[in-house]
Image (cartoon, rainbow over all chains, first blue to last red; front, side, top):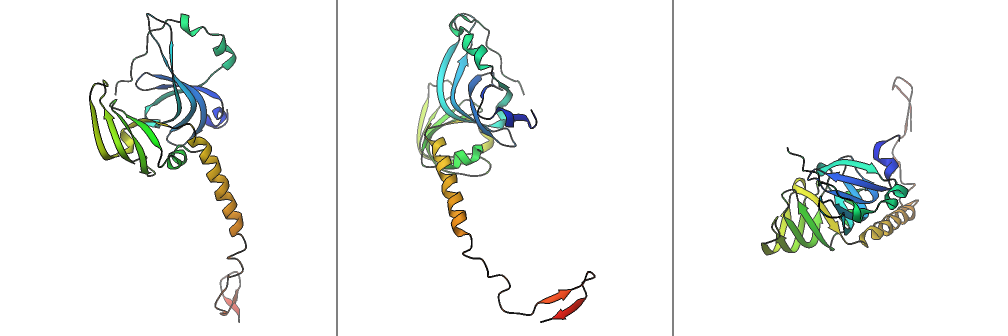
Length: 96
Length: 121
């Protein structure tokens, strides 16, 4: 945990962006402005009425301005989740 | 790996750029700079709601307006190749330009700790 994001590189991370979206993928790199490289990524779209929809996206560069949260995923725990039965209100966007 | 290195490698590849206002731009990356400003060719712009489309031969996007870029999966492997090639060319260069220091056969001086000249020639 020494230098922030360095310890997350090549791990599965969950990104919440300031428009309220949630991306999951492998962190391949970052820079001083928190621009991120996300490989094998997908978006998780939450809904109060149906299960979580996963949209496959692939390789992404996310600009640091829009990054609200970067979290390391517990892959073992995540694989035990049944996303199709999970109901959750989508989170709103950050209001500037 | 740095995001901007990956972006540079993605030059001449197709990509999707989403702006902070929700508009998306699909096109081939021509060039980019250190601020993520980019030049696209053969662009299709889609409105925030995805109901309006504009086609344009080229466009320039200011980096600070970008939310994210979606690039082809294979580009990330090309970065690795490029860094290997660069590292190799650096080692190749070793010794080539060496031994040229102190050219011109001029005088060499010996200075003491105060900078006073002790010997010349």
